[in-house]
Length: 164
Image (cartoon, rainbow, N blue to C red; front, side, top):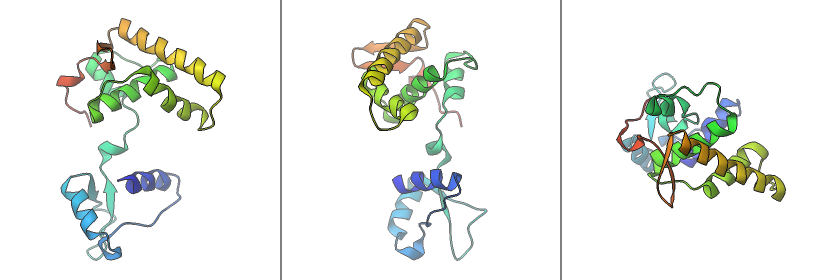
């Protein structure tokens, strides 16, 4: 799975990687992934002799604002980018992992998205305060809820169906 995701991102930047196929000893792994519907055969690029597999489109999504917007019946067009990023992270954890998310979990991921992997403690602490403020604001705006002290969740997500 990690190989497919990495390959997708590199292919988008025209840095093509080798393909996994039955002919290079990945038959069992490909079968398992196909049966789990985590990958699918690309009908346009595949040939009868050489099937080409792609990652499920649902697993390549990075922007969940349209889904969140439908869930909470609000438009987020003018929303601050950091706020959108925080919502995206919370949605991903809630939807795919079925986990509540604490600001202390969001901060490192948002920091890496914005600044890379080299941590500047002053900027990191400042971003951590900003993430806590964003979560508090989203809670007050009735977009998030906090079922317990373990973290935040997007409101109404438990009963929703993915929108793809």
